Image (cartoon, rainbow over all chains, first blue to last red; front, side, top):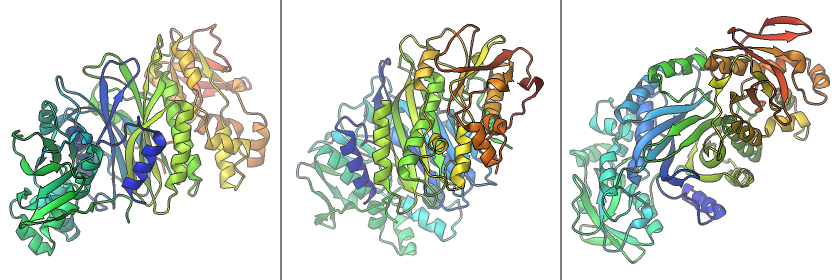
Length: 305
Length: 305
């Protein structure tokens, strides 16, 4: 059973009103006029980053991947709650210095948490966000046939960075930096929330599997033009050095933390790349060098070993 | 450095407006009229429970200890977010069956979360609660000299249960059940929220250390009458069998998950025991067999090995 299967079964158990399915849950609370967005994500040593990574990097990355979920909802970040389980000897001071500083940078208030001992470093963050004035929540389920499909930034470079780290590359290599410190696209999320329609999510597990998820929630298909995918400078040379297929990294690896979204034709989201269109037929396809084929839902699965 | 030291330093770094310090954080969010209470707590294999514990028990205990934090704030539980990091082979179905069932029992909506692999089982729950109509938030800082000091239930039995588990006692032993499945005092919390004054918290790390925390937040001291402490039936015999001092278990062990609270003299909280009074002098004392002495802030510390 993989992560998507388990979540599907959990949603069946919880019934149709369950808020599970987007990058963050939208809650309407008794006695409160208005809604909040809540997201939870963990960073685990040996799973999301190499053991021994600088605690300052762990702290910043933890905040960034959670902020990316709020960006995908069009939310403004508000409060953070940190559960930190760390082995003896962990440098809490270094972690918290970086975490508190990153919170200031992104206008987040660290409001509570839990500290414990654990053999493996497990850092879990809960982030609460609110809806900007005159904005709307972005959802995976709002894609419509005929919408253009967009990416908010380059893909594949983070996966290349992960491979470089395993080979001992220095932290100042651009791909390593991109992997360690993703940049949440909060401003783009806010911009999308001002548009009248369109779906959104962030690419955390890979363009292919994440696009399957977006289309499943929307009841649509999609077709991607692989030649239109945005890549970082030098990405093809880097892939040659690493002996990997750049399109596999770009489509079937994850942790890019850029927004994948749809808009009606004619929209011009700033600094983004149009990579395809949403189609009525529930197939996910990609075109490369004129050949059209099915795009499998491959990517990072958190329950696959 | 222990957990309290670390939290104190973190609060200094965050400034005086930080909501850290109570069992849950009270948040006021932009664009929303009203406040919410948010708490986060983890259950970790080998730390909070013995490795190999039935996943159904882990699930129920995780929810119960977090509900206890909301009870300590006088909050009504609302939404839960679960980050579950489990080793290969973990019985997710058994965990989720019990968790979803316990959520129904306590009127909690599982609204999101995160699943990952980890060598050690780490389950972190974020709970969001709201303030009952005409209620007030309960805080640690509202104890006043002259207030009576109360306990919402018996103490020490959970610690005895933990010792019994280590000795292989069966799960149907009352003390083992008490340890595995604490009963959050939500109804008592709601009752306290209807009173005009008084402080509250839940006993998670031990009466002694938790009373020190309550008095520190309130700027007061307290004196406990040890002969008034409420014990479960057969507790003294059980302690004799275990060769432990019942007062040490009752005061310096934790995980009782009963409310420790203060009220002006004359109040009659249902089913509770008065164990002492709050005093102006900032000393925490206890009286046993007529002898008055200082009560050290000993108890469970999550960062001590």
